[in-house]
Image 1 (cartoon, rainbow, N blue to C red):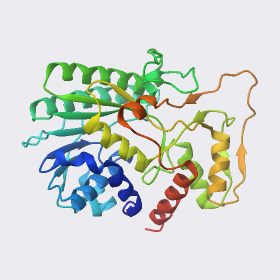
Image 2: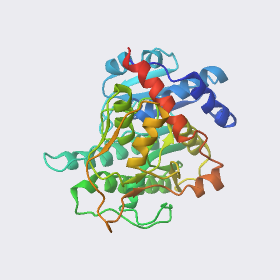
Image 3: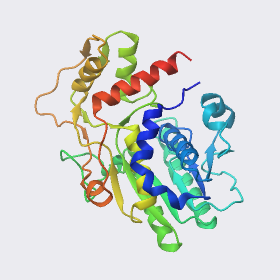
Image 4: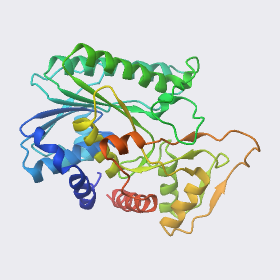
Length: 347
């Protein structure tokens, strides 16, 4: 059972979005992917703000397994302003009510070649997006937010990639299934916005850290926090040079809510931190921030002259057009995540 999000994080989200919520009064919002990392933050921050602000709003959250989610997050599932709808994003049965707002955050980022994994991921993104857009178009939706990905840019060849970048993944590489799916889904959003009286907002999301981030999945910072909490060494299987940046999840929630309410339709915005750090230094930063004394072990030596893999956004558009900034620094984000995960592990 996961503990509630930290009260100071929920207050942080409310403080920086307070002026956005009046239009939500008495309205309904439909959220796909509401039980994942993004979804838990969106649903719980909605429930908190709905309660504190007295919005009398209601959220319907699509989930494959309501019972499992209720067991994981009973404090969310038991909120009278939250309804769980059982179903798969590709073929869920449409609820009868109208929903002025929709957030489509359901996705599968675990595409693997072989055994149909990549094909299933691509099909899930495309069919799920089409199903959700069709639902929105026929159920009174005025504003829809689609959580896309920085993967749409393909191999990053600049220090900070901007929305104007026209790079792209290799369409013949099975590992591109997730990225190509997101690219096509963005186009689908644009076409629906053109054909229906609906605003489609596009958030190209990069890397994040915070409560609900899995510690045993393919997220390096989660693995490092896990290793530090266990008291062992922090292991890096590669050479430590890939470079990322990490936005704390409470800031992520602020950015996504702001984009839903305020972003122009069919205009992409990068979502993430500009503070680049390589994986080796990240492991050391985790060890230092948590005062764990964990030794960082890097399996391979960097190859001289090899191009460094980067995944870091330029967020000037979000700053200048929406007033969005990063509030919580990386070391604070690491400590907050570890503190919450420590509580989670004791449940």
